[in-house]
Length: 441
Picture 1: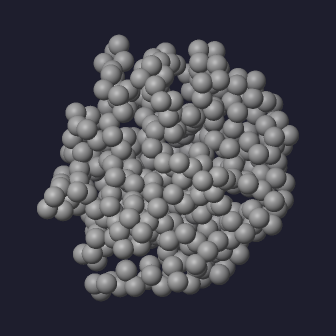
Picture 2: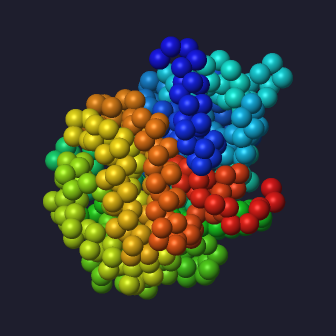
């Protein structure tokens, strides 16, 4: 793209979709296309004042570690906050996805103040997360809290990837947009600590440290997640494997955090076990709505469970958890990935909205992650640019409209909704929903 054209595109979309917060337009663009970091904006890893990127499950980068240059050695921050600038942006938390070729760049000015630059023009101030006190302490075995129990969403969510690989393995089974297995391999190759199966006692010890030093109680929820388990891990099936962590956490810290689990859409009895173990929110992610695309992009899920059964199980789980507490994720943007995806934004939005209406008509509110085309995945390789920004902006509009159609409000466990309030960092769905109440910052 020629110089200035990205700014023109963004401004055109802001003008065409005035009901979508302008903050969300920039946030979606940064999430779909990544951001470059000047060396002046990188962190000093775990020895610095800035909370570094933890690589909590996927790489969420547009290059492999060896391709990121200095950003591979000195990690960028976990997230950035945009404020002010010529667009007068309200406080917007954005998950960091590194792309050295992005038109967006974070750099310090001559006074050392960080800003976000687009087409060479400073468009906002940039805040970085301070190093939390609990990251400065290690477990008794020397492991870091960041490795065992990193926090994201500006400290709101403890992200417990307790199984770092996925048993859907190889081209015939792996989801086509997912780099969980490659991310594991690249961290191992770089000699970084990256625990495959996290020991329950380690997780409890890390949470103990967070609980002790998070005196402001910023951390509000934890997510238990990891790869799909088709057989067993450590002798446990999927519900028991993820569930036994929840059980141990709830016994040790009753009610301290909202417990969430991301797992496959499991049969009713398995879902009941999650509930019995103390999990409060269940995320049986359906990934992509369209029947053909689900088969093409999620071959393992199609083979082991199948799309219709997956959806049936999501509806069944609402009877156990309550519809509000079943929040399946989809990967926004893969609908338009070549070679199989929709060719026009209109078709993609129509399909995705059909899925939203299906779930929302049952009181279930899905949420979404903005697709990051990671280069080691088949879809990332074939679509380095991801989906068009217009798709993401229109999705925000369709999402909010569908929620209003069914009288639903923002789902629990995501922090506050509304531009300037939201902390959910991997898509703008919370930024685009109406604010509950004005929040004092």
